[in-house]
Length: 479
Image 1 (cartoon, rainbow, N blue to C red):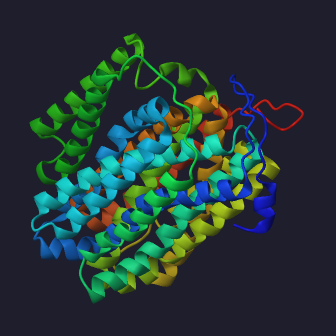
Image 2 (cartoon, rainbow, N blue to C red; image 1 turned 90 degrees about the vertical axis):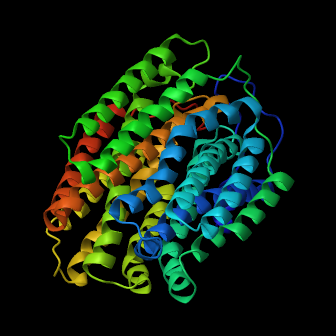
């Protein structure tokens, strides 16, 4: 974070339908808040990239195949997605700092259990617990950032850009760090790196970060929460198992049926309860609806493609963990640079134009990789590995800022929880769906994955064009 950025991070009065906070927010306090919340996001993102590097060795050491490895990835993502709304609601109810620190502690404890897991089942269960911790880290970190920035749009855009960039640093560090750790020690060591980072994050948050205001409600929406978990679990498990029993299996059809029933029941429950976990009235705002759909498309393609590339490079091309880490390094490095550029470009050109441009670039990147086969030179893959993160890195901070601008600051915890629930659900579906496509025919499946990804992102571009609305500003530049 440069001095110029710090000088520009200033407090503005609230225009979100609540009383302005008269207390000044010092530059030092804001910097520490960004650092502490970014550490939480770093753990979530680092875990994604490091685990992908270690998949081949985990499969060999614990004697599990593609289906088992899909569960190692999706057990984490599934619980993460299922509990984000609950975490966002809890953050708004008791204060984001308390929930954030609790998530940190749970994530660290689960990381220790992952590193000590003797069999696949224990690893998968520990990954579930990691996902629960991650579910608290992401929406609570955004709620704390949003509170720290008050309602100053420029400040919030830069803070979110820096927060996102920190996650990109973790993605960039993960492949190389994970490769060296797996090579020098074992796959277990990749989980132990979370312990010191988590300890620092907990201390900084509890010692320095300002608590967000509590938004009291009558009770938690237990029915909605259980239906959300059941629906996402059924859908993800069914997609994973298609690679074993096939798409026409009665069990697969039953699984999809259960998932559909749970989704319909969830919407009906949320429309009737007094304090819904998912406030359906949020979706009356076209910007909120558009950003959540774009987030779904981005994560479905991105998480699915990263999973496919990790298996392609290590199992088809026989890259070692270190080789894979180095080969994949351009992807997160470009993502980092693009995130940083997005925080500046968003304030200059607006969120919708930046999202549209980023999505179109990402779609072109997916298309560049649609002809991968077992003999494709790495040099031929490189343009796609550079173009995809360039587009995604431009689009995601703009998407997040647009969503936060569409809701009152007091509801930012649940709003960010909705966005990240949809995104992580998309990631789980992407891994399950794309994994099933390559399980039967790896070469043809890879081609289908990249063509489908390009098409999905083009559809997301259209949603952004017609759905995103610029926020209404006053003369001070606030909402």
